[in-house]
Amino acid sequence: MAKQISSKQVYFLHPLFILTLLRISGRREWCCVTSADKAPLVVRHWKMLAMLSSLRERFTVSEFFEENAHLLRNLEEAKRLLSLLERYTVISRKPFLESVVLRHWSAYQWGEAFLYHYATRDYPFVKATNRESYFREDLGRMERYRRFGKKPDIYTTMLPVLAAWNAPDCLTSSQQSPSTLAQYLRDNGTLREQLLFSLHFCFGERMKRFFPLQGFTLKKTIPSGGARHPTEAFFLSFRATRLFPPGVYHYDVRTNRIILYRRGNFARAARKATFDLFAKFEKQPSGMLVLVSEVERAMWRYRDDRSFRAVLIDAGIAMMMFRSLMRYFSIPVYSYQKFDDRAIERLLLLRHYHQVPLYVASIV
Image 1: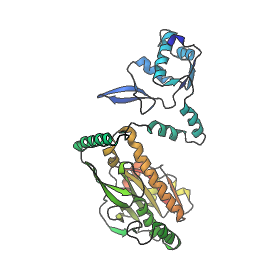
Image 2: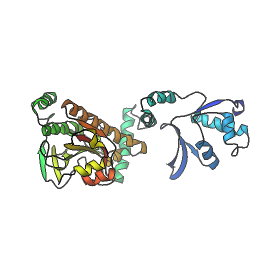
Image 3: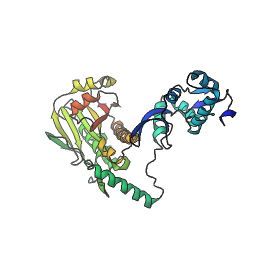
Image 4: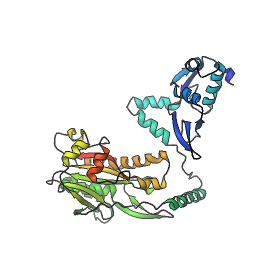
C-alpha cells in the first residue's frame, strides 16, 4: 500500500493531534492521541518521536522525507510510516472536518475552546444504552471507589460563624413564585436582598436524592454532572452601606444563610489579586463574588483526567445564572477567570488543592 503513494501526495495533520505521556498498565508511555474515544498510538522509539514532533499542518510525502532524511533509510520507509499514521487518523489525505470547523470558530477567537470541547466531548463514559448493564457496571465502579475512600461531604462549612443573614427561600417555602418575588425585589428590594435572592436561586438546595453506594446528593436549580455540585459561592463585602459589614462571607447551602467568617475590609488585597478587575467600572465595587470548586466532590465519581471539564462546566453554568440575575436586577457586574489563585485562597482561607477558585466577579 505504501508503494502506491505518490511522493507528491498531500497530507493534513489532525487538528487535535497531541504527543503526550500517558500511564498505561503502570508504565508511562509516549502516546500519539487524536480522539478521546480511540486507542492511542504508543511510541517507544526516539526517531519516531522526533518525526512526529516535526509534523506540519499540511505537507507532502517528499517534504516529510526531506525533513527527516537523517532519520529514514529511504523514501519507501517514509511512505510506510505515513500509511501507519493515516490508519491511526493522525494524518489524512483530505482536510479533517474538525479543521474546517476550527477555522470557523477561530474567526470569533473561540478556536481554543472548540478544540478543548471536541477533544473531550466523546470520552467513553459508561454506556447507558442498556439500562440493566449500565446500572450494574456503574454500581460496580462505585463500589470500587468507595473502598478507596469516603465520599466528600455534600456541604461546605466555613468557621467561625461571626454573623449570618438568612436568604429568602425563593423556591421552596415562599408563597410567591420565584418570578413574582424576583420582580418584587427588582422594583422594591435592596441590593442585599437581591444578592441573597440570587445566591439562593443559584446555589440553594431544592431536595436531596439518595443513590446506592453514593449516599445523598443535592438537587439545585442549576444542573450539575452526576449531581456533584462542586461549586460554592464566596463573597467579599467592601462597603457596609449597601451590602453587609466588610468581611469575607460564604453562602452556606445547609442552612440557606450567608455567613461572615472573617471580618475586615480586604478591598486593597482583592484589587491586587484580580489585576484590572476593579478598573472595569469607574465606581469602586461594593463587593466581589468568588466561585470556588470543591473538586473532590466531582473527582470522587469522575476520576479520569479529561473529566476536569465537568468542574469547569459546573462553575460556568453557575456564573451564567448569577450574571443573568444581576442583569435582571440592573446590578453592574464584571466576571472573569484572571486572578492570582494563591492570593484569593489566602483571602478566603481556602484549603489549597481542595478548594479551587475558578471565577471572580465584581459587584458595583
